[in-house]
Image 1 (cartoon, one colour):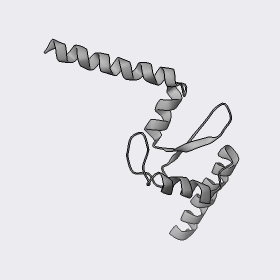
Image 2: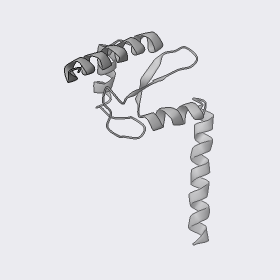
Image 3: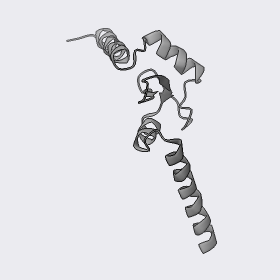
Length: 104
């Protein structure tokens, strides 16, 4: 049976390899970003750890913009990393709230 220390070390090594391969980001740099963000998602304001933080990166140049929660990272991706799409989504939500408030 494997020890928990071995499993934790293997998980960390796997995470380190994936960060380097996919984002050219080493472990210490990831931890620096996480610390700079106060160990929270800057969009959702939810707590983040080194294990559940998702690398948000530009699909144009590959540059890592920061670390996000899974939901925030998926949301940006589904909206095409587009400021215009995000602004339209915000307006859509505001329009719904205004309509709902007027219906009451």
